[in-house]
Length: 381
Image (cartoon, rainbow, N blue to C red; front, top):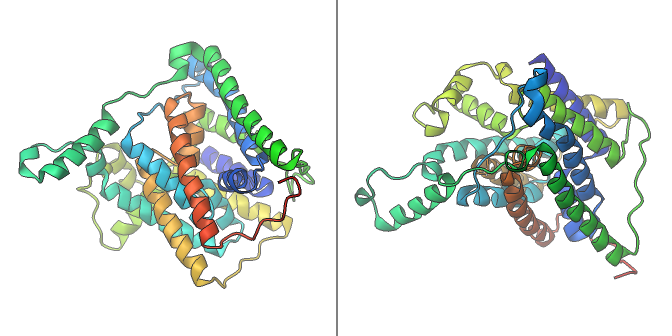
């Protein structure tokens, strides 16, 4: 747990200084046709895969029992990823982005985090609908039985596919290099066509006080991902910790989740233990404190306590959508998208397709709500 806390601190420090946001990067490629953030994500994924894929295949030979997350692709996970993608644009940050901006002093993102946690708990209450078939369909409404059968069959009756298992570590690396390269080069092509040239990269000014370049952020976060595999034995995750926080809070005020399917088995053991006994939870705390330290060193920790009605409403709606969607999709942009891809699991690509589609809708909604400043005229357009 001490190792998890330190890894989380490094993640928060890097996320803050590099302003490494998955949400903003996706918004910029859609809205401004600028792809530096998206290319930095591809670099982060590629660097992590260089270590993670060989670790999954050969790690036990050197005493590292790291395992990837290979999960199924179904209707519920597609719906969850789409809802999450929409929510992260309305809420103004993804899971890791919410944590590091909270640590950086954003009061609006505190609201987003609270309702992110609430949405996660609501999803666990509905877990049985999304995962369990009806024991006797004749006892319920036929239309409901049909819908539920489609949902649960699509969710459960398919296997996860691991590229590392199918092609070996180095074959999977080659395939990932092609796919990541296509996305990176495609974003560069779009940017050049619209703007005539790629945006100049901002250099790292100071490792302690920032700001960092996106390159430095990608390298630091790749280190975070590899350390998670070595210390915790699994990829980096965030939102499972939010569900745990919310369930504990709900029980503290008199609620009872003991008969919820989601909180049975090993998850019940987590619920009965301390939050500081859960690696994901401890890492999340570390991210907040790491970002807080980074903001203090940069002299930028100055919370703004006045929020508009629109700020609060979009934070509430975005947080609820992210929390609910992340549980159905096996995680967020970190646990499902990044964690899936560095595991070599096809569900990471599945999440990316649906998450990006939801994000596209979220960007459109932000424009309708005038949440972003008007774009400057582009002479090349």
